Amino acid sequence: MTCLIEERLRLDRSPATASPPFFPCDLRSHSSRSKKAVSRRPPLHSGPLRMRSDRPRSNRQSSRTRWSRPDQTERITTMAIIGEFTTNGNTILGHVRTLTVSMKARLNPIERTSRDAPDFRIMSEAAEVGAAWSQVSGDGEPYISVKLDDPSFPAPINAALWPTEREGDYTLVWNRPKRDA
Image (cartoon, rainbow, N blue to C red):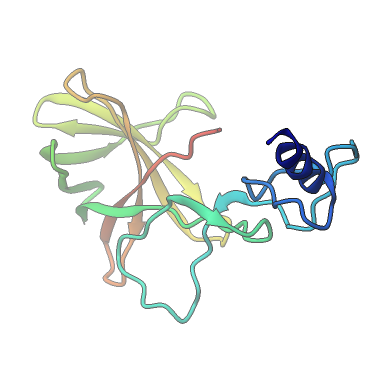
């Protein structure tokens, strides 16, 4: 009996008959005598998934990280339209609607006191609920950066007020903030 066990041990130690490692990312050689790391398999990486241009796109796109190749670095962000506004004289009137927020809002222009001061004060009825700044995007398009905050909100809402095709109309677009990992 001991002869059979010793024979199996000798067979397991020879590289030709040794069984492959259990885990695919195991870097040990099949031989127990060798301490040199050997692996011919490429490592798996977790990274963002790139959308293909041939896939149909919806209004709301996912930004989940999935298993992918290391060369896929483009991230798709989640965007949602949460309001519509229109110009009325020198103010901008509209509404903001999400699952937890439903309010009429008015952007009143204010005189800037410093370079970082907002261009608009956002009011809902008699309460001030935020501020807005005139900005220019990287593509050269003007938009209004909006920050809504209220004690009843779990966190401030950062959004952008983009002009539409119709003169004087705007769409309030919200993007999920990017988190540093």
